[in-house]
Length: 105
Image 1 (tube, rainbow, N blue to C red):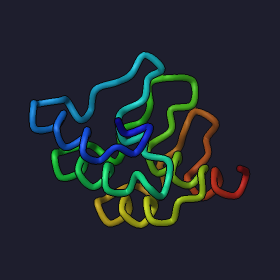
Image 2: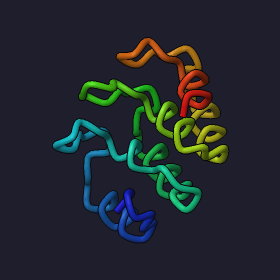
Image 3: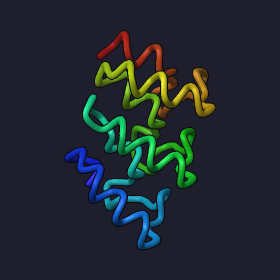
Image 4: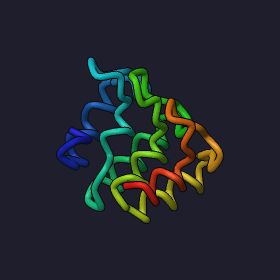
């Protein structure tokens, strides 16, 4: 639901107790799939239900959602994650901060 920015579906799943910090088979949380301007509402819903903005992916990148938002150039998501405590100094497996990720990609 997050990958396709379906806020209604996200709301329904959350109402049924979906785990907001669960990991996909590729090691990403639902917040990691919020990578478009259209997914800001989905990200807000997840955060309000307890999604951890500093949870790194469990794969070779070890990106936080802020790394993903910076990589895809979504300032609305960057602002949202920062407002909810995302660390600007978080390092991924390449020893890159979200700022470095934004510049490199």
